[in-house]
Image (tube, rainbow, N blue to C red; front, top):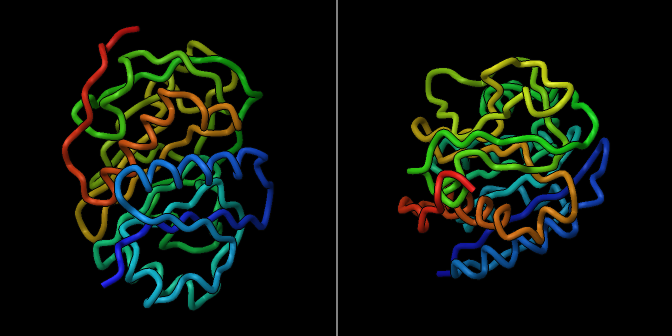
Length: 231
């Protein structure tokens, strides 16, 4: 039996982030460090039941617009409902805009952003691998995404929020989720709104965030060593 791998999908049908190559390379390195093979692709033909059946996780890395075919959508939905892991990063919130399943999977959709600027990420869950490496208040520079609605609700656990008082242009108020997950009906799903800039994928803290997220969606439940809540 082939070793389970991580499929990193980078297709765009809308805005394309310059950081995608750096992000794909970083995710490949992180996956291989966990013992997985990794494949980055923009080919929607990769989304078949046979191909996804070999995946420990699927990653959508800043995908935008309609990036799956009808048959690919069916294969991906079956994969997730069957227990497959899914990590969605940054502009993946702006993918598949007319597919209700995908919107329900993430819990909300992209609704614009202010200019890139520094701000603070408030980490609420230090017992989750995706956020365990982060300080309680993490100073970070990014493209701070707004969403059409707050994703917080049944089945969704918010792991980190934006402190809108530390930057300009937030629209969700004091409860502005940035990183959240769901684990219940189907596979493990985690979304992080962070990751706009190429430099992020060389940053030790951000890479630790991605590594923990990838570890969790592939089935690893133990968090990495925790950093101090404050830095």
